[in-house]
Length: 284
Image (tube, rainbow, N blue to C red):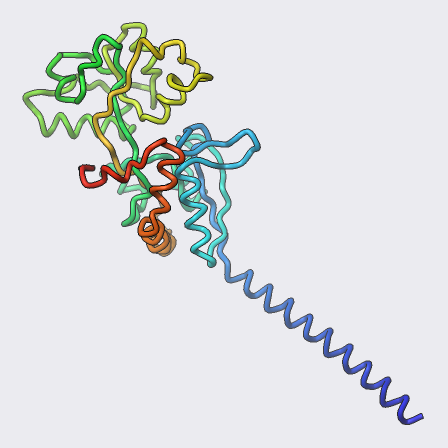
């Protein structure tokens, strides 16, 4: 009888031990999860190949995939990717709606007043001129200016405007005709095709998407217009001004990714070439 009572007590004790262990494990798990900070990563969902929403509804593109690798190296953070417009991204990051945003962003002095630029740039972007085939001999901004060609208007808050403005400041005797437009972007391909202007500034990715790609809306112009690269420019994620600690963590992760050549691989995947190979010649 005593033996039976002893066994019953042992059974109850073991059950309590298992329950308590489970509770402690669950509590530890909850505490570990509470140590992980959730951050919102905004991306321009219509900026292929830098960032876009694919046919399955997933965020992808060079900038997004780099951020996914960054997330893997930062166990203390959980990223939530939010697709939006370029304008909303800028406003949202500045106001703290998003902690960071990626949109193939160039550095400008004006933007440093609104955002944190980390030490490590995220990638490189090819900037070029859209020209009619007959003008394909124009290879640089200097050539463009010397020819007296007209340039499609660029909004003053667009970083492309700053790129041309910097060239003009450095070359006062051979300036590009730069006009500020009302819209953030204009349809430079169509404007060039119609002869409204002689050329326009565009990023290589959008040109490839719109003209070179067989399903591009302007693929019918593939023999009529050309893209001539005049610069390769560093691009950056934009962090909210209160996110210095997050930006520092990003810096450590991206530095490791660059050392492992992961960014080179992604550049080849999304741009069709390793833009990092010309990094030594990048001035901006």
